[in-house]
Image 1 (cartoon, each protein chain N blue to C red):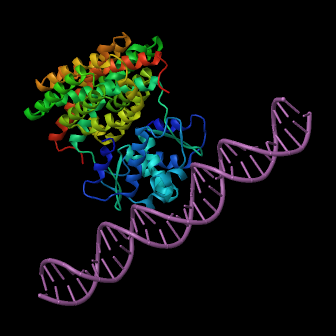
Image 2 (cartoon, helix red, strand yellow):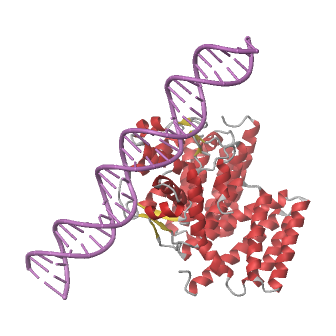
Amino acid sequence: MASDHDTDRRSARASAPTTATQARDTLRDAILRGEYLPGERLVEAQLCERLDASRFNVRAALQDLASEGLIEVQRNRGAQVRKVSMAEAVEITEVRMVVEGLIAARAAERVTTEQATELDEIGVLMRRAVEAGEYRRYSDLNVRLHALVREIAQHQTADRIVETLRGQLVRHQYMLSLLPGRPQISLPQHERIIAAIRDHDAKAAEFAMREHISSVIEALRSMDYLGGPA
Amino acid sequence: MASDHDTDRRSARASAPTTATQARDTLRDAILRGEYLPGERLVEAQLCERLDASRFNVRAALQDLASEGLIEVQRNRGAQVRKVSMAEAVEITEVRMVVEGLIAARAAERVTTEQATELDEIGVLMRRAVEAGEYRRYSDLNVRLHALVREIAQHQTADRIVETLRGQLVRHQYMLSLLPGRPQISLPQHERIIAAIRDHDAKAAEFAMREHISSVIEALRSMDYLGGPA
DNA sequence: GTGGAGATGATTGTTGACAATCCTGTGAGC
DNA sequence: GCTCACAGGATTGTCAACAATCATCTCCAC
């Protein structure tokens, strides 16, 4: 799910398993999965074994991930997983706020009856999950909701950007979902987003989405006082 | 100006002349300058001569520009300058609308007295240029205004994205500036942006910026009826 | 004349080796 | 004991040659 926004760009016709692309996707997943910690050095030779790829392809993968903002490469010093400061995390989320706002507005314009039903279903499941205290499940539904909204909007450009930004702070977001009290705050926000899209109210949808992510930013800032992420 | 958003990322310490980076920047400028037309094939061997670089570096440059969305690479078929359809151009500008809106809002929060003066100066020059019918000069001032707003906002993440998006449709924007009647429409919009930022009114600044770029989107759509870009 | 199989030239994909650079640990000098 | 210089190893930067693939053209059969 985190790797399909580039894959399908090439597989328009070529169904090639693509040697180099695979290495990149595998490495990206590994980083996103947390197998490499921020600041950790990524040694090319090691990655060759790990990914079972030649140094050439490893290098290409590193270059790609660097342009995605997941890693940083310094000349003659190799690559390392990028550390995103709290200030950067806020910046990234701010941009996500406005772009996802655009997506929500467009989703409201394009949503079909079927899709609206699907949105409502997710809303119901979310409420149940929160009431049952199943926060892990709620977190999954959260991802699914945002993904569905993006699918409805069908805005490739915005989609790509949001996906890239999201990748840059998976670590922060993970910590965020563990913050106590978050679900109680975000559930009604999610419900407002769903309602607005269902009602084809673009302005309300954008506003609701921005309110929601705005509160995520607040939470990020509050995390900063608590010591922030590693 | 179009190539500094990556350059300074590396030159944080290393003042390296950067062999591969130079090739990339040169090629990007060439594409942005219009020396390679959309759809034109970029043959690696030819670029080696043109850029005076080895194929290795040329290849790295192509990969970078591909991730910026300037060119497209197909497996075993090489690279070609990306054709952006009118629909894509609209999408790109929509995202630019919301992100530049964010930038404008933040600029309104951070603007200093000195910077406000500078903004006003640009506003005055813009009005003079329009009244004198110097549209080329007006277009330059337009670029300068947007750049200054971004500089005031100091939002690296948003900045990088806008710069990337802008690169993807230089060709379209160039045609746009030649549309008759545009300056008369956009001048008051620019003046509203300047006024809002000067007055530290974040909401008004965001609204004015969005209004402005929204009208750019309208113009793009109208261009579509006229046959669109090549 | 037309369609398709096959050869040919051009272009890209990949590899391995070598050079340049950086990091680490050691030892001499103060 | 501390600092600095210098080797040695590790890691990345770069290149040129080779293999794989694609586009084009020719030629033959029908």
